[in-house]
Image (cartoon, rainbow, N blue to C red; front, side, top):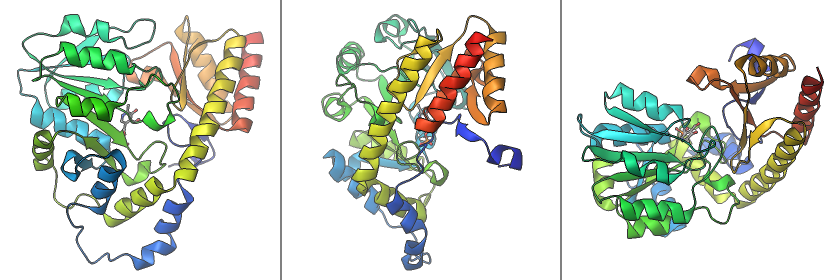
Length: 341
Ligand SMILES: Cc1ncc(COP(=O)(O)O)c(C=O)c1O
């Protein structure tokens, strides 16, 4: 990171505002001395076993990747043929597009309905060539969710050869009771692939760990696509420590819930157009590009780095990470001044 960036408050990459679990932090410090770095990691890894226990699935249903983006890459490369199609929503996680293009697969965009991913928009796009549907849930950048019922409806509608990939990178932040119990759906519908990440609430984005919960056959295919020994012992140790630190996780969920409500309510009251979110960021949209640029620059000048979605071709919108009380009050004050200017 350059020095100009180092004093900015990072509200642009949906990272955990509160850092990582103190237990993971300790492991990366003093705990490192006990690590047997001269040994290769073993398989199945302890992390695979831990995740299998947590979700009550078999260890063979867990596939770890160097970040969930690596698993997305593996799915596209291994499970989708060159002449097959992948459906994603417009205004969703930019890496889907980048990875699909990198592998020269065909992408089909489903429209959103008022910034929300509705499964009804996907169904008419399905044809003989469709091989996979990727849905970020909550969606990045809009923060909206599809419900258990909607996901199950989609799974009932598509044939078994079509993979439904539900990307729950922000799943731990969700407090809406209608959020899918995707593990139970996965047991019923073997074409459902669940993706999760240690980069968000677990605060380990720099260590690159993500995982998939899949049926055994798909797990075998995805594991063949991996590079041997990709999971280093620090990343694995920190991920296990973070997973065990339930106190840190529940604290982050609670703070994020309170703060996103605070930010949403107060920014809405000021007349800004915001979408209710279940994630750790908020989507703000504008009538014109110039107004958005002005707010982005004003926040940046005050050292608040938000995500100007123009960089992803999603103009007229900003994504603002949810900070703590101090940061969010500052955002509200600045937006209040902005709306009065
Ligand atoms: C929806 C979604 N999935 C996956 C990721 C990336 O996760 P990872 O760091 O595990 O590759 C992100 C990162 O922003 C994301 O927004």
